[in-house]
Length: 266
Image (cartoon, rainbow, N blue to C red; front, side, top):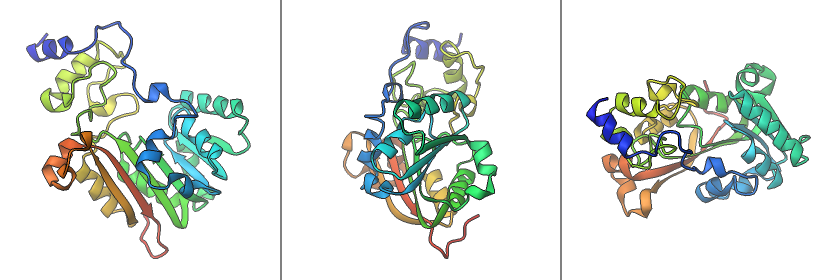
């Protein structure tokens, strides 16, 4: 074992012990919208009486919560079949299966009848995981009506304190800055047996979404930016306005995009 691996392993929890708890592990329908309500201005007003596409819905907590908070109907899509099974069970448990529906993303996006049907696309905690985020944003745009909105919010861009998303086994910030990908993946293999050797290979994927990369994708999307906000780590003053520094000290990103009728949507 290399020295760097020994150091990172020493800084991590003991192999075989339980994962460090993260926010998603503690989701309930009651708290699932806590993060987006804090980051997306007037979230509940945006979805009230609207048809909503939850893009990257996971096990369905937020989709069910959106309906309970006033959305007319919500369709949740994801690529994880086990999560979709849990999502359907959750909707049945909360007696809203007539207003919340779940599809496999691949099947749903191939169905041309779904295009232009939605008032709002809601994408929470997913944009940093998409293998091709520009393509997924174009898909979101195809799904909304002219004048519709895309609400994006996610925590921990790539170079932020926990941008590696390895908090399940190590709480050290900036792992991906201090240690090579080879070292991180080698240590991660002590806690996960999926054979991943790159960040992109881990379950749900990780696309190394920096703020600069996010801005390039948005600029090329043909969508109008109605609102964008960067949330500084520990509310540090001014850092979100300094180009290089903000990459390391912005912990969450929010953007509201509008599909104007004259926009060019690929």
